[in-house]
Length: 298
Image (cartoon, rainbow, N blue to C red; front, side, top):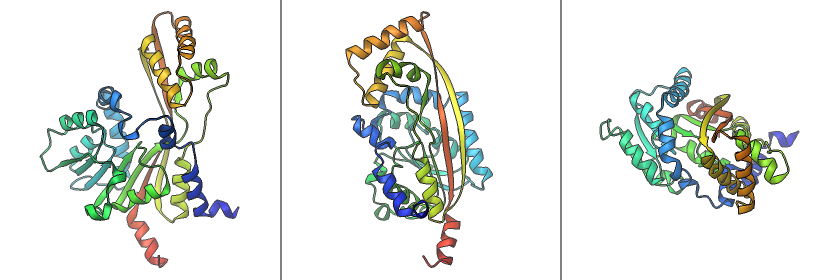
């Protein structure tokens, strides 16, 4: 039981976990900073669709309900993509520094922020991991640090660096369960002979370590899903990409197995794919943490 309350053990476990999102991407030969390059246009369209804008509004409204004020606030958006949150945060009157390294995402981000004054949104095209917070003058420089579904969060040291930039609040969202994909549930047993494995995600490390280290925070776990319809050809390519991501043979044998299955299961030529899972959101209150450390002489 003592190990349950030992922060050092939890830090080490997270550091050594081979199933973190970042490590799985690296093992698959995927550069996390460029993984969304091929999906940039599609992701941008989804982000600024009516449904995408409702989702962004729902999350920002939750933050406002917890006491976050965006008017004239300084915000660091890490992993900004094409501006899915940068834009609505700036629309609420914040001054935003958006970190993004993907060239196609940056191009779309520049288009999406063109309506704002030049000094309201600044793009930093460097990896957050490579930035020296002290040297850049970012130590407690932002009222809110915002990190949504970004693999920059991969161990406790990365969380500490993110928290170092925040003066009042820090928002982090991560998967709280394995990604659910109806097509993979169908394909996986054909290729491996086993059902698609569901694994706990590293959100648990983050929340438990925040608790052990005395942070005050609000958390929210939601289940979200969406259904998209694609052609059989597109479904085949998505399935092959998934095999690569999971370090399974993306060879002609498996391509043939999947193609034959899609031909039989979806004679109309259209494949409905349901995706989703559980997602965790945490709002950390840095002002309360500062009070805690002063009271305890830390």
